[in-house]
Image 1 (cartoon, protein in one colour):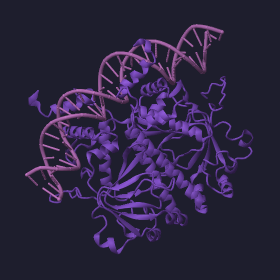
Image 2 (cartoon, protein in one colour):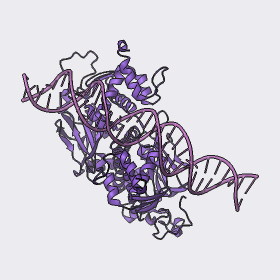
Image 3 (cartoon, helix red, strand yellow):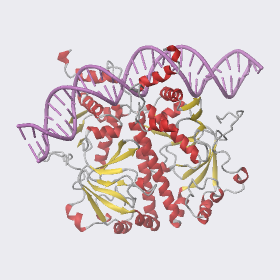
Image 4 (cartoon, rainbow over the protein chains, first blue to last red):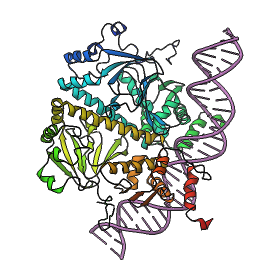
Length: 286
Length: 286
DNA sequence: CGATGCATTGATATGTTTCAATAACGGTGG
DNA sequence: CCACCGTTATTGAAACATATCAATGCATCG
């Protein structure tokens, strides 16, 4: 855990967003989707209560994954999907010669392993970044159940489609955005996910290193650091190591959606902008 | 069509790879998957002949899309998947403020429209780059059929998963490769697809502009052009406008898989490499 | 035959990486 | 407890890759 436990947390939103979603007293007694706090955002979402009950008979196994351990390796035989219950994962896309990249970060409610259906083997590697727990969803069983419950089939399709759409947006990010846009989009994306899990969405702790952010965004860690610092100087955010507060969402969104230099006497290009920002913090030096 | 019809074509591999896969005399008489030349690479792949027969009752409608027309727009209501029969498509990913990018090129046997399942609306736009024809696969019907024929359900999952995996590899391309790698990977990818459709895979006509290649690869058209020229000068390929011949697959693969400057007195960086290559073509100038 | 779209190539500007130095932090073991 | 270590983050200067701007050529099409 990267959360400083000794700090006061008045807004109650800097804690691990996973923690507390499922009341402790339920976590052992009732291992059913119907009583899982995540059911609205996880696989059972949209199903009738009785359908959720049946699903729960399928999804009865849990698996703990310690920080740093892998959930599945590239090439492992595909047998199950996994639903993240608690914790935090990264999925790693591996290409031929020592090329690899983080393809996504995953938290509560996310379904992992869709890439295994194509060839019967997982084509990526998923690693826990904190001590985590997943629900195991055996594919054979799920497949059978989807036949008996058409809504489940639809839901499965919806989730896979959502993954396709998510990856599309990452392609857009990687292929046609500049570093500052990427970083802004990233911050807004993280915030949005926390918000949907019921947390503030303007104040949170990053659970990954600069290098991991860079890997995800197609940037070097120094570039990420520089742009985060720049946003801080500009007053768009406040950042100290991993603690982030989004201070000007509109401005951030403007950066994310391109359109630089809306200001008047601001520099015309991004390199000078980084400089400009830095200097205007120390007017006595000019 | 971009194919010069008046040219001799001794290798029989520069023609439109779609043409001729389905014998002309079948194309009107038998509109069934079971007799479609694409059945092995399309949706019915892996199904029993009688299952294919049933699938054919579902997939009985065709749709022609003229060059430049859209198959579906972003935001259109999702009702069907489409299987490319003949022709050539590009899918366009659109982001907020005038940000858009080509997410993929699609030819015979590809299934389009998976992104519509997530929210009931297509989240991309697909446009025909040549006069094309698709099979219309109504989703409701497909969903019902998948319930009656489990293998069809599996096949559907497989295809969606394949799309997820494909997009992952594009993410890798966009996020962690340099321009020359990207271009090499692109050429090998195109070649591979032609090869799988039964064509030579070393000699083909590009069906898209430099700008479209660039959009797909996250590069500007000039950069694409420069690296194609460089590959030509190096003898890895021969390219004239849209006509490509891959001459040294191993070398191309080496570029695609990183590891530059395996040679001895070759320049150490890529800028100089581009220069070097150009100069060594005119030794009299040195 | 001019107009238009596409491709190539050069010169320069710009954004990002690379290399390097330093600082802050957390954990570990004397 | 504190000195020490490895990891993570920040920041600067220089090198590099790609984008941008611009000019030209070459086809195709009406």
